[in-house]
Length: 111
Length: 111
Picture (cartoon, rainbow over the protein chains, first blue to last red):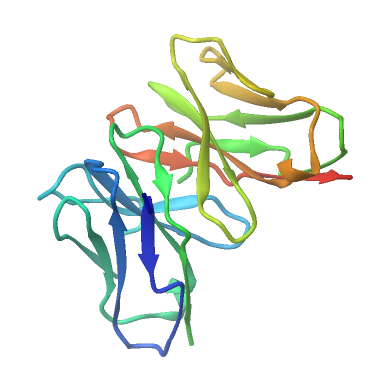
């Protein structure tokens, strides 16, 4: 059981470039989440998917899009990266909306 | 905006001492959770307490919840150097699928 995996682990982008962060879980969880964590702060919810086929905005969705490709995979896309999107991005999944399981994170720097 | 706010922001104690962290939140909740984050890692779920519970134990962890004061505390007894981490409280938004994290308490346990 790999749990929640994220790729890539690190990424450096130039302003205006695009990229997709990948997330997959092998626990047959219904719900998946994308968060960002800035230094000294907690996690802020970007988007979530309560179940396969649905996605909803979280607290800070601007500048991001998501795709729930199937039950296992939930991707996060930055269409035109900005320095303000420099952060650590975490994907999480859960069966019941409680006790979320987190991936190891993607450290993104936008210059 | 963040639902939960932890206090203190940082705590430094000696190994063997107890560590107490507090969390306050703003709106009605169904449950409150505590997570731990080791440096550079994803969050790990520690314990969940439901709104109709007042106290819960798990190993060296003791969590209390006072819904009238909209506050919770996490007590770690007989702390160890391995407990050094950031601790976050998280609440639901009353609706179900969203979990809202506080900014965290950084705990440093000196050997």
